[in-house]
Image 1 (cartoon, helix red, strand yellow):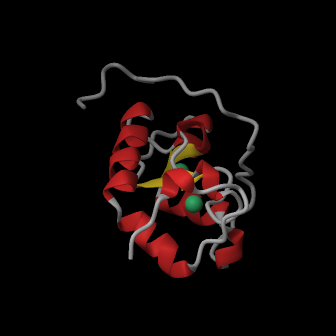
Image 2 (cartoon, protein in one colour):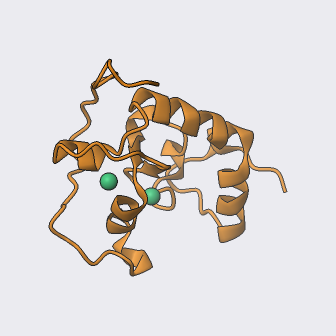
Image 3 (cartoon, helix red, strand yellow):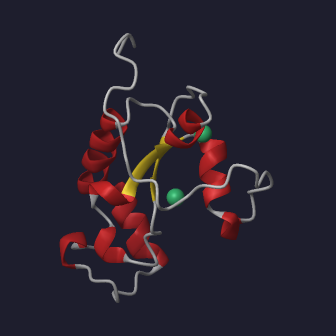
Length: 119
Ligand SMILES: [Zn+2]
Ligand SMILES: [Zn+2]
């Protein structure tokens, strides 16, 4: 199956299979690395609470299924840790701790938050 994320529009309907192919694609893997690097490999949600937690997931602020045209747009992507990612997807039924409300409006990122990081 071949997908063309750069041709996706807001109205493109993505099947689960298309999303699976997308997340395995080199385009996404490359973009994911770029975003993690930009965010210093730290969870940006935890960081706002002054907790440096390693990020292992890159999340779509506007969910992929809600607007496929933002699939590979840097400003729609944010590095998060696994628990925060679950919180960001209440539809998956994991998010139990709702105190950490994440605002879609916060889109200011500081590159290299801590220059003393070993990486
Ligand atoms: Zn986190
Ligand atoms: Zn997500």
